Length: 145
Image (cartoon, rainbow, N blue to C red; front, side, top):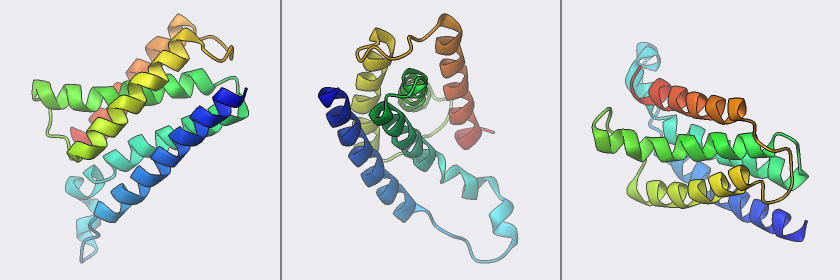
């Protein structure tokens, strides 16, 4: 239990720090019509990933039954961003430092969730597939649609 809370606190700290950094990168446009353009909403993609990390770390801290699902959702979303960027599906706006930090956290979170390290509710195959599909949806929503 102590290790779970320490890891969740570290993940929460990373998520909060990246959230602050990503919010400071958002440019708010002048004029009303600029808020309805795709370029404005694309800026929120990195923030959405870091908020997923915050939610997953809170669930992990509480030992909630859905902690493994949220950890897997964050892990797949964070890893799909650089993968989609590399295959040329879109140009990611996550800065390099964010990509590196989020990828390290994503690998850790995927390992924690799939291995069920803290004996929380085990991920079913359906939940694993759903976390991949939702991760793809989040990435495509903020970067491609």
